[in-house]
Length: 321
Image 1 (cartoon, rainbow, N blue to C red):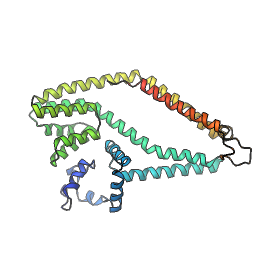
Image 2: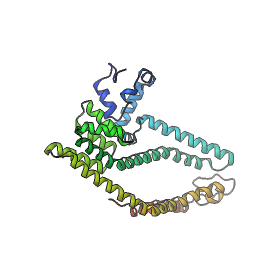
Image 3: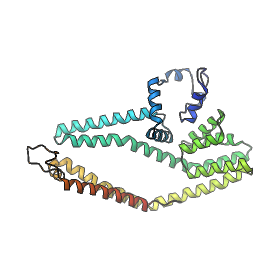
């Protein structure tokens, strides 16, 4: 089967690449896999466009593109809602079995289910960008060698897409596909930089843009940039090793009071509950009459101190190269 069906419009074809929706290679696209694809409904498309146009939806769409997830904003929010329902249900069922304040533990389940997918997405984006930066030096050297062998820039980038591992191979193949569809080279590189925000990548794109304007030996320029990037990666690795102990100390010191407090609350809710409410046995808890304002103030100050301390320790171990 061909790469595009006759009913596809030019906007739809370009949107599969420029908008971050990539499909499989042409060799792997056959009738069976094409018929197995589920097309989104008009309601889903309209809802996704309405959410994406807003600020939070646009930011989430950028995060999904950076993580290389073939999800729409609506699909991610649906997964997030399912995680919230599952986490709250587990906490409610667990509280009914062992006893305790069901509203407090349902609130904990809501926080876990709501922040869990976002934390996973953020970790996936960070890991993917880090892996891309680690591979970029070798990829640029491979491009420089290809240019010396007589390849064009597009052919050199295509060789990176074939020879290098993921994620840099995926991103360079996407760039080659966009240019092959007629997208402007500057816009293609801007799309790449949007998906992979990297200072080293920005340096490579700027060098290519300058060479297109004034000329010069692009192979030599890329070789120098590749050496600089590899040296920077090496120095970052040394800094990461030297600051690993301080970073782990910050994580442990931050997590220790939170985990210990939750464990004590789970083992003896009445004892820990006296911090925020003071009701006699049989009275309704967590009401205005039972609330302890001073306890809530101290709890808020403790949370603020934990967050502030973690931020300070993170900044102390953050060294730019």
